Amino acid sequence: MATENPMRRFHVVIPCAGSGSRVSMGSPKQYALLNGVPMVVHTLRVFQSVLGLAQSVLVVAPDDSVMGDVLRQWPQSEFFVSHTGGATRAQSVLAGLNALIDKGVGPEEWVLVHDAARCLLTPALVEKLLLACFEDQVGGLLALPLPDTLKEESHGRVGKTLDRFGKWLAQTPQMFRLGMLQQALVSAGPSVTDEASAIENAGLSPLLVPSAAFNFKVTYAEDLQMAQAILSDRYRSTHSPT
Ligand code: CTP
Ligand code: MG
Image (cartoon, rainbow, N blue to C red; front, side, top):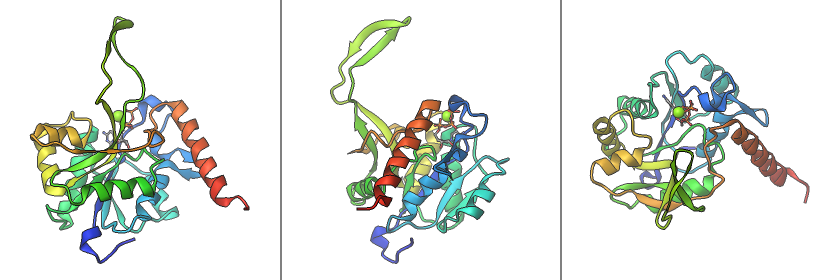
């Protein structure tokens, strides 16, 4: 849903070029059917329902032959597909940013980078991030204060207990200005695991925006079952007779 109000405009980059090796389902997890709908479509629908979404990109592997069919069946008007995914997530994200630049998106525009595999995101969480970061000089990310006691391993046993105070788990979306993020990722190289790390390497401090545990990333097989259960529950609560 696009808007004419420049204050509300943001672009999205969805890295979607992974192979899903840890989920062990034999095909990329972003296409796993949850409630009969591919995981990535659940993810895209969240952004499509947020006011201010502008031209956005879905980065898939160069040899991906599935996404075209998926989008024919479940069209997502603001997203175009770029077959430029790289060997690491950071390379796929950088390719997505470059695809937006090629389309004429300017360096001062806001970009939200979000994992295709984080399909339980809600419009309310996106709103919370947008509200917190639109006026910020740097940008920020959804994150969760660490809920459990933190242990450091030594040969399969506890080496020591670390202080969990002030520790956060980074999630996505992560929201930064296009030009700043593109330069930060080029400088940080292909191995950074999130956008905030690249921005931190550039000497800046992204804003931590408190999120929710349900915005986890589907990584292992049991995460697929958990995602399915939560989506079914959400569906029941919006479609049950009152
Ligand atoms: N991703 C990507 N390009 C890569 C690697 C990952 O676009 N070279 C994307 C994935 O498709 C996913 C997100 O980055 O949406 C988070 O990555 P992860 O959960 O690690 O997914 P996979 O790399 O597919 O899974 P695994 O690490 O288990 O192989
Ligand atoms: Mg991976």
